[in-house]
Image (cartoon, rainbow, N blue to C red):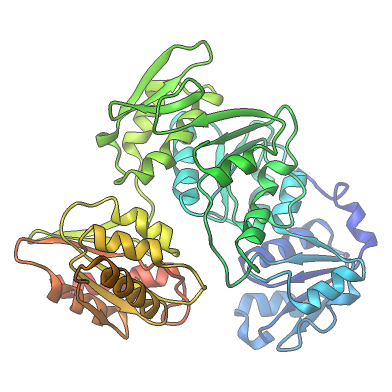
Length: 471
């Protein structure tokens, strides 16, 4: 499909792409391919020499492009009408606030994709669980041989895939708070998972973070659909903004729940009221109660698009868990090693701990985001975690929280040691393992910045260290 006419309004605006990460580069390539004569600017804190060689060549050959690179990359932002902002750049930066004050509008790769996408969009958000939910939904639709793409926070930058999308394509789109915060269009189907606190190094407070999430329903129409668990208070509040059809799920049956649990089996209530058994929970390839919350909405989405129950059952059985999300690395001599590097906040690690009953050693800690570790500390003591290996700086706060609760409760805290790198952490964890075996869980409850490039790098370092020490 040719989008030049749909983009024509952009030719009258002064446009800057702020941040040249994966989404920024995708936005540049899309705009340039459809509007080769459009004057554009790119602002990024890196120098031209720090970009990869292909980017350097392409950008330096673009005669219609202005480059604003280096430490002063924000200085001229207020000269533009439209700012395509990368998800990770806070809109609270003084330079961006000044530009908005002068009339500039914020846009994004996601916003432009939503405006142009001819297919139906199934948007998924939440604090944790959205990646798994999106992946399972995509797998269910694929298993049913429907035309579907997995995009957004979990997949490929959306605009780079727009050309292959047709009216019958179902786009499964994982939406982070960063992608939602500037959005003025909501998806046809909004799936909202549990929302707690996250990214408090980016947002002023929890309320601002939650407000960013509301865009998933705020712009919905009566013909649209919202899927959620009404027992999650903030989730239910965001769902209430939708004038569309409300489809609910829960671990409890309840007359209003479309998907639910009955005697440890996943169930679906059809529009006529009849109920079908989908799958016993113990046959899911996803451990832990929290994954039931991730799977229940996928059953609803599958039926929405006329996937029969038998196919949904087959899809759920054959789903392969995401990398770094409670991923079993290996089992040896009675010890199971799990990589949960995607657990970047305390709530996600708390859920991970609830997935296991065997003696457990936890590797946790990392980049500071001013999150509260009290509930996690309490669960660590309740679950009788037998040893902790911690990374600074958040490992220090988790250690303090555990000691404070242990003192008040009159219980002895587990042994806790600090590590400077992942091989050392795995080595210490190995020393904690009891003779009868158990679990070594790397679930950091923190972001990865500092010691690691990202959560993937952290997970791969853990997996390598585990294989080395068990060889």
